[in-house]
Amino acid sequence: MKISADFDSGNIQVIDAGNPQQVLLAIRPDLNSGHFQWFHFRVQGLQPGQSHGFVLTNAGQSAYNHAWDGYQAVASYDQQNWFRVPTRFEDGQLHFHLQAEQEQAWFAYFEPYPRLRHEHLVATALAQGAELVACGRSLEGRDIPLLRIGAAAPGSRKLWIIAQQHPGEHMAEWFMEGLIERLQDPQDTEVVQLLAQAELYLVPNMNPDGAWRGHLRTNYAGQDLNRAWQSASTECSPEVLFVQQHMRRIGVDLFLDIHGDEEIPHVFAAGCEGNPGYTPRLAALEDEFRTRLIDNGAEFQKRYGYPRDEQGQANLTLACNAVGQAFDCLSLTLEMPFKDHDDNPQPSTGWNGARSAKLARDVIRVMAQMVGKLR
Image (cartoon, rainbow, N blue to C red; front, top):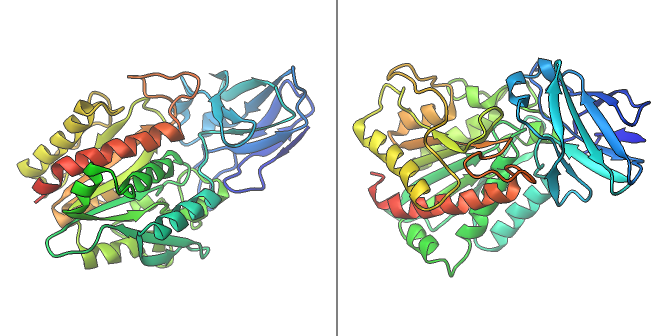
């Protein structure tokens, strides 16, 4: 048996692979940070017809160790079709097993979004009419493209959507793929309606270094980008600084920051109710956005989510709060689960890339319905 993680978003350390029924592993922490939870590795030399077991020995010390309860790991034989495998969390260790059908399989915390697919997504978007407004650089020199879909015109609303500030939250770029694909359908009447009134500014992956390295939470410098919106710098968080500079130049009328939540098995949105500048107008827009998603049949709900902040008590280092405060606009953090959306459980896959992309297409419908009342 050979276990490896020396590839895009790979993360694992082998402790003892001597027993194929109980392979002992550990998750590698983010570089320059103590955060860890994301894992992704390949196993070669499986015996078809036999059960192989794997143990993440340090799962109980991970960043969100309560998140393992009710969680099921994902596996794939071809890196295209991912499915959940039997998993249990016991005595601080995560155990999962696979009844092997082939000699090789991949395992991950969630269905990965590969860098090659990201590059194809951006290239296809540009070939179909998106504009490359600017291209930032990560600390390790990877591209961070800022795309615009929709012609810039006087009076058009500026809608910003960014994804994967936290690199282990791969559902965020699956969401962006679904978003971009629908936005570039010229026969889609709702898209035509939206683009007649708005231009969309999109950053499909804010943290390419962390994603490539198999990080959960931080960039190459160990910086949580979603805690850097009051202190962005070229030394620690150029990814955030790049986006902020263009926001100030262009303006923002709506902002969505796309994330994944480790613990909560539901899709939900966190708003800006704790901001000093929060107003009844913004509260009404937030409520309408959530309600319309549900009314349009999206996999979304309003009952479960984060505790609400008292007004004036918001953490303004978060993107959602910082942008909402700076631009007096509808600003939301959209969270998808690593587990499943328990309002509509699908045990074989849990929440996955396809459902993330479908949610994005539903969000476009809501934006088309609301674009005329953002200001």
